[in-house]
Length: 379
Image 1 (spheres, rainbow, N blue to C red):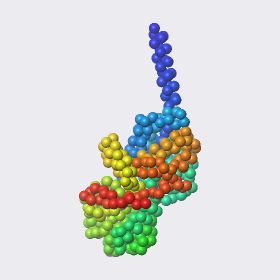
Image 2 (cartoon, rainbow, N blue to C red):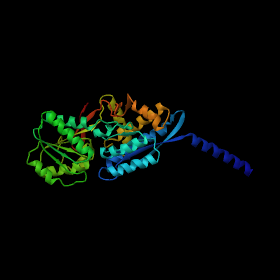
Image 3 (cartoon, rainbow, N blue to C red):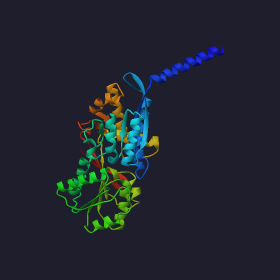
């Protein structure tokens, strides 16, 4: 009797192990700063990836006739280029099938060479420096508009819509901050505006008294900052202390729900105008709103900025694998490059020859009563 029981148990074990073997594991890497000053943004991105992976596994996806299980390998780059390349190499060594990330341009650009050398597709949900997709790598994609579009649009907005007469520019010397500030300055000048001063700080700074005092003498009516919300918040506080009553503009790095808290109540209504890469209108807005509600229900936190773009990036990558009938990077990469007309929660996704999103949108926001409010979607 014992022998029969053992035989049955053994047979069940063989069947279960055979079922497990027939289910292929597809590893998707995610990298963002989940420690440091902008950890709230990195965690936002990671949660977007987790939601996409959980839904794909719940739905049950087959690739090339085989059921697959998706596994997320999440790494922290702390927004640091060296840590970014180390994280990239770790994912390559783990033989991931694709990577979503990194968040910052300063980490995405050096990491892109590591992925390119390994032939692993990389989709950034948020890196906006133009160089990212202009290095000639076939593995590099992004689902947001770049700084030429973002910075230039804000520059024209400052000169034409805000009618800024004396516009000051500050950047944090990162690939993102300096890049978007350069494009903003070009946009201002192209629209006939006047840049009265250009100063710089760094992405760890907390004291801006010297540069703000220098700019105050030039009586700016608009101040643009190229950098992230962790620096923009204290900068707004010190502008208030110094009596600089200027409009404060910035790119997607400052365009977060955390900014009012970081500014500690010193932001005036409509004082801040920021632009986020991406944006939907009309019927498409319903899908994004539903995503945000689902995200809040699952994680008990609001979307910061890029979680929806991470979510779409994961799904676009998996869609290419399904179309290619393979999760092998070399086989699905050509299909990923052909992505056209994919309907995501952030809008329709199609890639151009460089891996940039076609017809990328921007959304302009301001803040009232500590809440972010949409001004307009522009293309």
